[in-house]
Amino acid sequence: MLTIETTDPSAATAQDVLRAYTTEVASRWYGRTATEDEVDRALADEPSDDLRAPTGAFFVAVEDDRAVGCVGVRWRSGSAELTKVFTRPEHRGRGVAMRLLDAAERACRANGVDVVRLDTRAELAEACALYERRGYERVDPFNDEPYSDRWYAKQVGR
Image: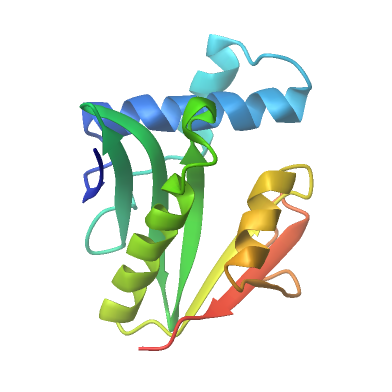
């Protein structure tokens, strides 16, 4: 049975799925399997410690005591930013990402957020398709993230 849980990003289950996420994203960036050192550097370059109260939240999808997906939310002034949206490859196509996005968007509404934003890369075609199915629309860049080439936003209301 799959459950969605809020957890601290430093928890062991969170660290395990964050490493899997970072390995996949870095491997796609390099066009080959990322080394452990490259993954360690990427994790250090983009820490997740702000994905906990009061600056954010971190959700994991758990099945059989293993995190199979995740999504982070950073609270911004008047908006929220999604990050680290991921489902392990062997669990894709089962609605895990949809349930994670549901949880993140509910948390946004509960925190008075009207607009949810995110940045990604066109190369992550599955993610872009997911966001567009969920009603996220392409917008002008709202940050200078060097690894991003697509920006999205969605009105989630209250």
